[in-house]
Length: 195
Ligand code: GLN
Image: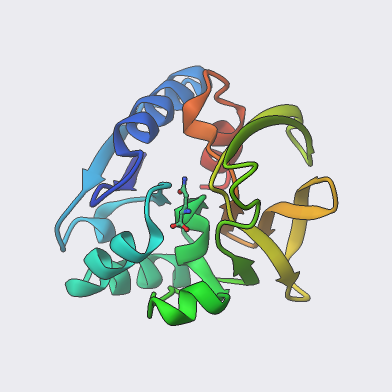
């Protein structure tokens, strides 16, 4: 199995490391590669878009064909996971901030996201979640977005308080938080078994 981590900006190294660890935990012989240029995504079985700064990541992947390569891979049924800024990027609809910054989204997950939804008082925090099919999970949130609306084919996997923080639509998985910043590989394992 070959897994791509979009490597243009953000928590790239952390995703590379935990994805490798998750493959090892699953006993899968696989390779994890950072993608910073066009022509690499199509040879992969799955793609992860990390957290970082969504406007920057978006600009860099649309600058060349990385964005359209991800869309093509998603359309052929391969799993795509977006975490934090990555969630914003894979979403279909954004909020006022997304519109104002002209952040172009991939439109893979039929949800409406809200950037920096927890405001300044709560820039980063950890919280225990009940994650569907994974179980109790301690999630790390950093200037996190939330999902305000979900389309009819989208399954909510986790909430924090009343807010949707994890959702899946067929092969597309979106998380508000950072599964790469823990030693717990369960979310990455869940994603890899979607392949
Ligand atoms: N606040 C960032 C954004 O909206 C996302 C934060 C993150 O990925 N840790 O782009």
